[in-house]
Image 1 (cartoon, helix red, strand yellow):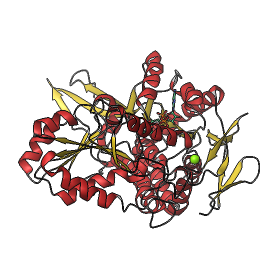
Image 2 (cartoon, helix red, strand yellow):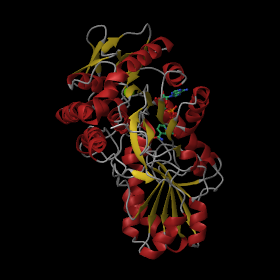
Image 3 (cartoon, protein in one colour):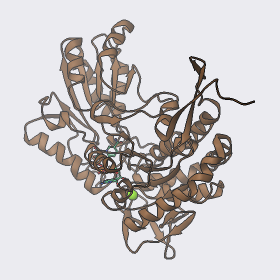
Image 4 (tube, rainbow, N blue to C red):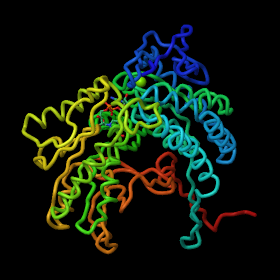
Length: 497
Ligand code: NAI
Ligand code: MG
């Protein structure tokens, strides 16, 4: 394996795959230093990528002040004025797809080819889509109440704090940045401490695009330090967070003091329900896909529920296909799954599997680190018929660990599918449209994929039911959150002209 190495070239700059990255915060259009730093490594081989500024309350205050000062002018530009700059930003992302893909792969270990072909083009799309939506689609027809006209508008709301995770750093950040900026809010992004690089590079692109100073800010550091300082700040208007349920609870408590509106996209333990009449090959293909990104996908259908009459045939085919998965360096074109993000996370995933083993679970595939690769590579794992109350079935593992359980009737499948505290997504595989429709209607989740997975249209609502989240993003739903939705009621009386 080539060493994935960053190089310190001067006090505040590192070089990663030939790209210079500023390790400081980006606040009010300036690079701002911190007294302390934290170490960023690559999950590919654990190599050192650089020391990154570790923000505290001080930098949180600076960022909020900068974003607050920039707000009135940004809001006043209107959707079209902002759109010109945001479309330029989307173009710059497109011009830098290769650089962004290389950086992100080095930092979070996801596949380079998927960053190049799928993820980074979507980053550009996230920005373009919401800029265009604000200009062309965001409108509500006026309506009359006893001769009075109701005019609905989506007005900019202020400073939006965006807190994002490491599993798809820039992709998940721009799902939020796109609509927040298009809505006329100014933004402070706090990327996950395990993946700080793409956000810093993206900040440079916003500068090049001509986004005014203070409109977009990036602060680096730990959730418990600068993250906590940001979400507790009285001068912010919105908090949008993607991450874990325990962190969401902490953020919600902070937000409560100022009644700051929150949008939460949290984890899942989604079911992949395979009915008796399913196309088995399709079901196997969809189920094996759940190992993608080494299982570090919030939407992943990690509980595979299969009708008992087809379970043996399914398991055989599943194993055959899953055993062919090529695990390795995410920069290699042939690799299908890479490493876990970080030693801490790897240990967490391994802990789940070790405890399942200790309690006698039947692990028919994987169940251990990949000894050919060393480091953070955990083998794709399948737990057969685990105890339905065990943590491997009820908790989000966020690794390449799937459970296979069987059921007898559609009703039983629905009950099992809905049995966790989560409700982010569900996959349903069936050969019969009416039956699929009936079952899908009873599944509790923000997104149900029938005979497919991961089809995501930015016009559609996205979010979680139950503990998987609060609110929906996509199309108007995004603007309903980031903007202040206003009704201006105009009387027919009192006019002098
Ligand atoms: P996390 O929820 O702790 O971290 C996500 C983000 O929140 C990071 O940017 C972090 O710095 C920030 N944060 C942490 N504490 C904060 C606080 N008190 N105030 C403000 N911001 C704070 O997730 P973590 O620890 O990285 O992963 C733990 C588990 O969470 C994973 O194993 C997985 O189960 C789940 N997860 C789910 C994700 C999803 O896409 N829904 C993404 C990442 C993790
Ligand atoms: Mg990293």
